[in-house]
Image (cartoon, rainbow, N blue to C red; front, side, top):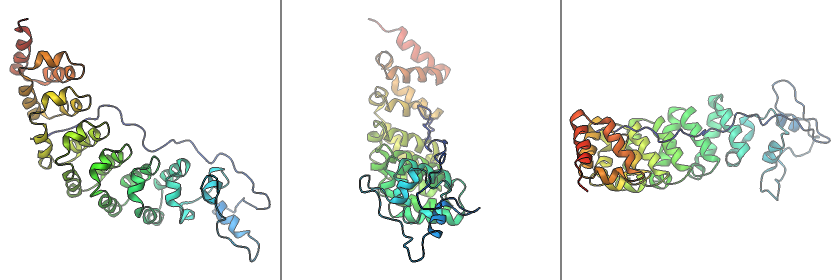
Length: 303
């Protein structure tokens, strides 16, 4: 049997705003921050340091816990900052609202060397970034703009953690993006970790989107365990706000099985807030004979 899925609602914007965060160039007293063509503000500051003076990044802000580089960036002191100048600060920037957006935008046009710099720094913190409110977007960008090797390596970081990620608010987005981007072999390795947990995911506000994405992206032959999990669960899933979505996105052969399962329960399900949508879909997609049977069941009901 095969299935196909369409998301219940429009996907939210996952890659941040396009609004520029470089609208103002603040002067640092005593330091020339304007830079020659092709030289960033960070490089210019380092080049103008007095002879013998340290050029390492000063201690960060003790109140916010941010490094000086991130704090200055947030205060728009580096309008020409480049990815290569974030060395040893990639993870910190990824977990910051403005820093994450900056990295996302840069990755779309980054050179291979710049991508590799960012990738090597985030790899050791990949799992924590996947579940981070801002870091997850950077991981998603790599699944979108990374090299095939980088995508495959990140997918390896997902393995062993698929269920907790699928149930987590930000991790579920990473799983969905990964399923859109990786090889069929790795897709199947990931979805196998959901075997035995399908109903738990289907009834979860985050997990149900992952199951839908599995149905949409993965070869049907690898999804038999999902179909098996649905057997005997028609009423339970139809009356659940998330479960009904999965049932509404089967392919014709699967919908016929669903329609047969609904028979005998049409009137009860039709009066339920969520299940009524499933009955409506059954009537819409049924064959002529199936539709006649559903209608007859309602019309011949004897109060």
